[in-house]
Every structure is written in structure tokens, then in C-alpha cells.
Image (cartoon, rainbow over the protein chains, first blue to last red):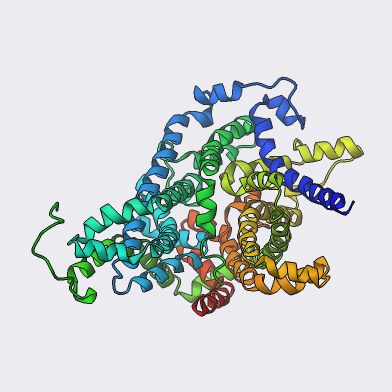
Length: 278
Length: 289
């Protein structure tokens, strides 16, 4: 009986958690398959579910959607570039700090982590100014570099933790065999670090794909903005096509959700590494 | 490159003497160092230099929405972050139960954190639309009364922005506290059970002492990050109605969009009394580890 009560309590807790989590997401889905009239009527399920909104998106049949394919391509391009560059920069730095024990390496990592003590919206302001001085405003590279700046410290930290766990005897053996640092990096380090590298690459990719604020500040031309900023434009007018906005939002949110679930085992263990060391 | 097995090398010279290894270390760390200098250190220093004029602050304080914004920010930090952490502490206790369905629930529960902000926050925004939103239409169906004005009311608007913030970042912090709970040795709970401890006593004497440091440092870190939460406010209320729901983050970005860099930087500097004690606490905490 006591066991039964216990399970019942767990289920009673689970129901509000499920509702709280899913209602806003269900609402996106509901609008995405509704006509405008049905969406604005406050119905909980449309009379006639339709895929018309997705058709309109694919054919770019609305003022706000004229550049849909270019914009989703921009999102993809920026996310992949930011992921790849973060991975390259962070892997090299973590290798130098953890395996080559470069002088001042710890200090560099501490400075890197200091980036996270600056609230994101506050860092965006001077960075916007600096990007202007570098002549990078309205250039997709500005967003890529901004995302690398935000993702790299965490990436270096996680990769260093993972790298510290590799036995040092491997390096010794390679050195005795006369390996150069680059050979050690390429033939020993990279293969052993692959799982962490996948996790970190995915993390940086998702961070860049999901980013709104920096994209909104740094890019403004219709054909250069990623989908996130384009979505923001939808509500500029009072009579916004919310059903199209939500359908586009669904298209935009699905890839990160799918990738996240595909890699969640790596992500969760990567994220919580070191969180509980104390 | 491919001469790994040169036969005549007997020496494994002392580690520190190997300058080529140090040189490669410097070369490999250089790309990140350049990123940090170009996109963090230089912009921040230059920005602070731009914020040196006292008249920027005079103009900032003279802005009629400034005081309200500062109050909103403090309320946002204290209420939203602490409420979020109490919830995360409680939920982490729920999610550590070992059931297959709870594991699946935790997978769903992480969705708000994994998907981008903009569609979900817009979704919440429309749900609370007073005329067409689903919330008021359900209220009308149930009570035949018109629901509240939600986002057109500054207090409710800020409250909803805080709830949106919690919705978005609660999963992440629940995960962190869960990891903390899982690191507590089971024997301690078993010993407590043998001694006949109640659930509350188990929490008070076993869970909390182990979790306290993690809980506090996570709260502090989350406060720093929440200060930079632009999306929850901007995408939900846009700072309105009548600019009454701004926080310092949205105000700073608003100034930069109006090309008033000195005011934007002054907004950041004004937030320093909030940020610096938090950062100081974190540094002390981290250096102790």
C-alpha cells in the first residue's frame, strides 16, 4: 500500500511537469497545422488540420518568407562554420594546455572561462562595436566568430578535462619513438578524443544555430540573416501571419531537437563533467 | 614527417628542455588567444573606455525608463533565479527516482532547453494574447469572463517574462543538481533509513550538506547569466507596454540599436554593482577547489 501511494505521488508530480514542458511546444505544432482562422479562434485542435503552411514556406509564398531557403542555408552555414572552427581552435588549445603543458596554459584557460562571467547581452554591446571597427558587420563571418568566442571557453574546458584523463605514458612512448608534437596530436590524441570531439562540435553547432541576440545585432541584410532573425521580423506588423511564423519556427526548431536527442548521452555527460567535483 | 623510427636516437631528453614542444604549445594555443584578444579583451576594454564620460551617466539616469528598468532587473534576478533554483532542487529529487518512465520524462523535460528560444517564446507570447490567445479563450469558455490583459499589463508582463526564463533554463539546472544528487553515496541514505530518518530529515542531514556548495555556486552563476537574458524579455514583451518591462540587458541593446554606444556602455557599467559581487564570490569559490 505504501509503495502504491509512493508511485501515485510520483505520477501526480509528473503530470504538471509534462504539461508545463509541452504546452508551449504543442502550441507551436497546433498553429503550424492550422489555418489562420482556426489558429486565432483559440481552438485546442484544428477542425481541418492542414499542411498548407509548410507548402507556403517551401514555395516562399509570403512576404516574410521570400528568402526562406537562403535564410535556412545561412543558419546551416553559420552553425557548421562555428562548430568546425570552435572544434579546431579548442582542440588545439586543449592539446597545448593538457598534453604539451605549455607555459601559461592554465592562465589562458582561466581567462577564457572568465568570458562566462560577462552576461551575454552585455558582451554583445562592445562586440558589436568591435565588429564594426573590424569591418565585419553584415558579414556572416562576424556571427561565426562571435559564436566561436562564446563556445570556445567551454569547449576548451571540457576537452582539457577529457584530455587530462588520457594516460601520460602514451605521450612518453610516442616521444621515445621520436614522434613530433604534430604526430602525437594526429596519431595519438585525435583518435582517443573522438567521443569528446563529437560532443563539443555538436554543442557549438547547436549554440550557433539557436542564437538570436548576436545574429539580430550583427546581421541585418535580408539575404544574410539566419532564420532566427527572419522569424523575429514576423511580428513587426500587427496582422502577423502567426500560423506561418509557428510553422517556420517548427521547421527551425526540429533539427536542433533531433540532433540533441541523437547525441544526448554525450552532451549530458559532457555538460555535467566537473560540475560536481566539489 | 614519416620518419618515426629513426634508428640512432637513444636519448629521451628531459621534458622541460624540449623547446620545440613548448614552441608547438604556443603555436597551438595562439588561435584561441587571438580570438580572446580580438573579441573579448579588446572590445570590453574599449567599451569601458567609451563609458568614461560622466555625462553619459547623467543622460542615462535622466532617461525616464531607467529607474523602472533597474528595479525590474533586481526583481528578475532575485525572484526568477531563486524560484527557478527551488524548483530545480525539488525536481532534481524527483528525477533521480529510478523508473524507466521517469527517464523518458526527463528526456522530454529537457526539450525547452534544447530547442531555440525564438519559436517557443513567440508561442508563449501568442498564448497570452488577450484577444485571440488560447489562455483567454479557455478562461472565457470556463467562466464566461474576459481574462486578464496579460502582456499589456506591465506587472503581469514582467512576471510572464520571468516564467518564460524559468521555462527555458529550468531543465539545465535541474540536470546539474541531479548530477550533484547522484554523486552522494547511497550508503548515507541507507544509514539514515536504518536510523529511522524521515524524508525531511534525510534531505536536511544528508542531501543538503552535500548539495549546498553546488546549489549556491549554481545560483550565483545563473544570476550572472540571467542578467544577460535578453530573449525572455525582448521576445515576449519587447520591453512594453510603454517600456515598463525592460531589464538592463534589453535597455542596453535598445541603446545600441539607436546607435547610442556610450549610453549602452553606461548601462553595462551601472550593472557592475550587481555583477562584481557575484563574480567575486565565484572566483573565491573556484579558487578554493
